[in-house]
Image 1 (cartoon, rainbow, N blue to C red):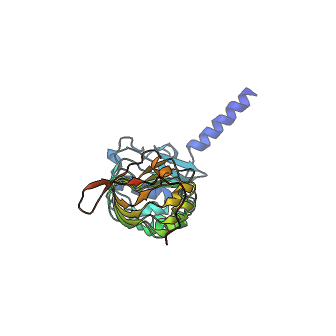
Image 2: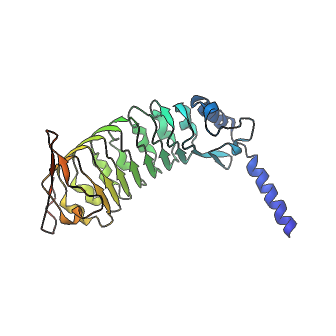
Image 3: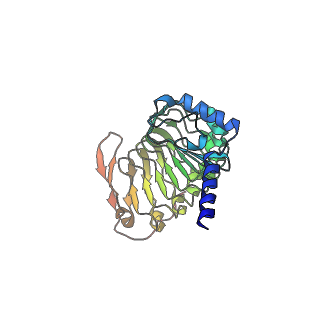
Length: 283
């Protein structure tokens, strides 16, 4: 019995080690390697070895399903061909030196669940095509040089649990559709140039646990119906231009800070309401 098990494991390992991907996917990986200066990566690919042994590449059923190359000294631009890896479920290139724009066709990655391009040098806007990735669970783009607005149809990504785009140069109002993301747990928009008000529809986001809007240009009153958000544990809205009273229950949340900045750049403190209850919804 022991010999049979050993033989089975040996065969399984051999099949896994020599798993073959299509020539098309192989060419895409080689293009990616070249365009991101693969010869200077911290951990390089041995191009003469089976693709299944390449660092950070996960293969399933002879298809590339994940590329995870965090902190690996990738330099250069993401080739548009990366979006042709149609079975890709995870693209994690955190903390590299990627520049240029996110490929406009990134939305062709229909099976993608995690897109993490944070801590790079990316410029341009977040492509609208991102909103076509129906399975996307994590959109993580913080600490880049991205500009423009959040895609208006971001609310179509019903599986999203994390949006993390802090420390960029994003602007405009928070899209109305974003408040439809009932599964969202983390919304991190701090240190950008977002403007406008927080909609009273934010109370629909009943899974939200952490909200960070620190250091933007947001204004208006903090919606009193946020007291209905029972899963909300952390909230940082300081260094904006909010006004009016803050619900007492909200002011007790972790990381809450009452410091705001007026139109002249002078700091002031919001006041906390002494009364419980929810005000009538604003239009």
